[in-house]
Image 1 (tube, helix red, strand yellow):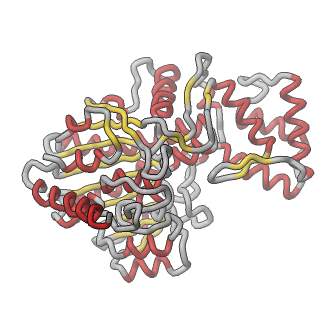
Image 2 (cartoon, rainbow, N blue to C red):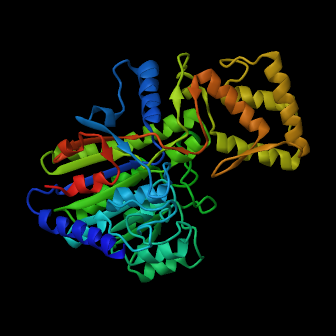
Image 3 (cartoon, rainbow, N blue to C red):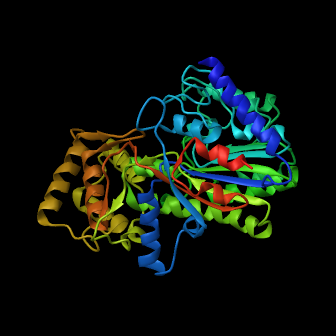
Length: 446
C-alpha cells in the first residue's frame, strides 16, 4: 500500500516535470468554492436573472467548458473538505479528516509543490482560515485536519510566495513559526502592500474570528475581502514570478453559509467569489494563450435548491446573516435587554418580516413564545458543524427560506456532484463527467 501511494506521488511529480514546458499554461488559476453545489450556482444565476437582468450569468457560467464532478472520499460516499481538498490538490482519494496524506497516512504531493519545483510562483488564498482544510491540502500532510500547529509548520516549510486567510487557529507562536520559515507575516492589505518581502503570509486585522473574514452580507469583520485578496495576490505573483505562477483561491464562506441554511448569505458569497474570479478573468484577457482558469467545488453543502415560488428579490432585503443574527440574539439574551415589540421591529428592519415577508398570527405567536424562551434561557437549540442556533433564530430563518422559495435537505455535506468550469489554455480537458481526482491531472496534462 505504501509503495502504491508513493508511486502515485512520483508519477504526478514526473508528469509535471515532463510537461512544464512551453505548452504548459504559464498562469494557472484554481478557484474552489467550498460547499458550492450546482444548486448554489443556479440560485445565484436565478437571482441575477430575476432581480437584475434576464441575460445575467455568473461569470463562471460563461466559460466554454462545464461538467459535473464526483466528490466521494476513500472512506465515505460523502466527503469532508480535507479529503476533497486532498483529491483536488494531489489526485489521491483519502479518508475524511485526513489532509495531504493517503488513507495509510503516507504523504501525497500537491500540484502546487510540483509546479513550484518547476519554477512557478505559488499563492494560496482563502476567505476562511489559511490553516483550514482546503488551503492546507496544498501544502500540509497531517492525519487530522485539526492539527493546526502541524499544518502551520508545513506552511512555514512550503517555500510558497503567498498564503493568505482570516487567522491562525493553533498556538500563540504560530506567526513566529511562519516568520522563522521565511514569511513576512502581515495583517491587512495596507501592511501587505507596504511590505517588499518576496514571501508574505497575509492575515486579517480582526483576530476574534480567526476562522473567517466575515460574510459579505454583514461586511467583513476585519480588513479583508476575497476579491481584494485575489487582486493583491495576482499583483504580488506578477512581481515575484512574472513568467509563470499558480494561484489557488478558496471561497470558504459559501460552505459556512450553506451549513447555516442561509440562502441570501450563500448567494452573496457566490457573488463575491465571482468578483474574485473576475480579477483572474481580466488577467486571462491580457494573456489568453498562456492562462488557464478552473472553477470547481470540494463538495455540496446543504443540498440547496430553489422551489417554484422562489422570490430572489428578498435576497437584497435581508440585511444580516443567520450567524450574525444568532450572535445578536445571544448577546440580547445575556442582558435580557429587549422586549418582544422591540424584536418585532428588528425583524422588520433586518429581514422585512411582517412587510415583504408576511407573518400570520400563528407565526407571530410562535415567534413570540420562542423569543420569550430565548430571553429566559429555556430555549432549545439546533446544532450545525460551525454553530448552535436557538429555536427562535432557526424558526426566523425557516420563515425566510420558505418566503424566498429556497429549500435545503440538510445542514451538512451531501454526496451530490459539483460543477467544474474552465476557460483558457487546456480548458477542453475538463469537458467530461469527472472525478475530483482527475482535476489536478487535467490541469497539468499535455
